[in-house]
Image (cartoon, rainbow, N blue to C red; front, side, top):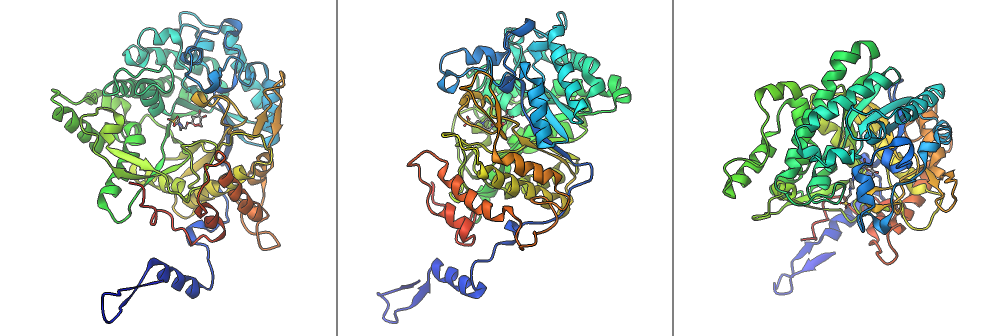
Length: 566
Ligand code: GBH
């Protein structure tokens, strides 16, 4: 535990890290749990919205049913090698024909709310209001009626990535006319469905539309011809379209329908890779500023943030361009966009460690951000490579939103975890994930005063996980795809989530340990953490730190020892 300098006749002893560590073990007489990992007991608001979510393309199927038009995901999925195993959403979970089944499993979960999205081409086959598909509107009417009859309040997303292909054929989000097309579509939906909906979300995760769809093309429509400019044009039109939809609702429907409307943004939380290096702090800040701030800053504060504007302008001018690749809002547009929110919709799954990298002449969203991110090796694995379990990040992100965007009411519109490979209905790793993340939300609410109004677990059932196809499963319910009836089979986490929602004294989110002194889920959590560790591909073995984090929390100090990936 001490280094001895044998070149020095005095043989001086210098303590290694292990000496400090062992000193603390002795001092603490064991391995106490760090404060930020201890469970907090308490309650959310009385009217807290407990929800679970899905999206149209991921579950509906019925891709050509009753006059539905094609979406960019229909086309993308039917193009070779775009989706893993060439999976398609033609049938998906067949929710188009299974309203009863879906509402039954929502009732089983005892959620107060359900977040789903509308397929734009199902209601407007060519994307315009020139041709309305009544059969499509009927489907959503029936779904809304069934939900309300079950006392489940809908949270409806207008756009969860499935643009009518007919609009894409005219340039999609790149064409300024997108703004009016979206406004008209939104107007029609408020008119026809709005009496039954109190929570509207215009767009789900705009950054994915802009950067995945039109930047590097991993998502539909799969465009990668102009990563330097196209994502920014897409983002710009999307923000304007969101603002117009908000104004239509505000001017024409709010008084009568009395609902709320906003946008859902997603972001990882980011920590510096090396907490002793200022540049890494700056890089970590840029991750969140580019991820969340790209859209949140104009909508909540007016205009893009200085950090984003300055970096893109500087890099554009350095490359010899006459102006920034990031479009500018006019003063009138800034006024029109600013304040178009009734709450902050947040999707969050994971955290990253950031450090700065100079991308040279490369011009893209990532190059402009100038950051590379890695994971802390002590964060547990899941069924998705990008998703590591790091619950603390959610509390930090909630606090960031509170500080940066004027303490808005926040609805967490997605949070969840996946598995892949062999089906195991005993998904204790999902219980572990939800317990830890929801508890961080509770801390943000009770200890930090963050105005959290609702929590939404992704997802109701296993579904088409975009480019990953059906291979990664986020659901509370397993969907047996080898049975043509596509039955929904509850996993263990159904009970867990129901308990969290319903528990009068609370369990994960609740008010105290049980008689035994430990909340009943405590032991299963430890087991499940170890199970998550095993979820990766065989052989992709995680080092033991993942396990010792569970058993010996102090051995692996998140973020501080993890500086060895260059
Ligand atoms: C959400 O996106 C979506 O809203 C939801 O539809 C989806 O099912 C859910 O998450 C689970 O993924 O392929 O390595 O480039 C969360 C943001 C966007 C994170 C896509 C993962 C793919 C990374 N996700 N991203 S990669």
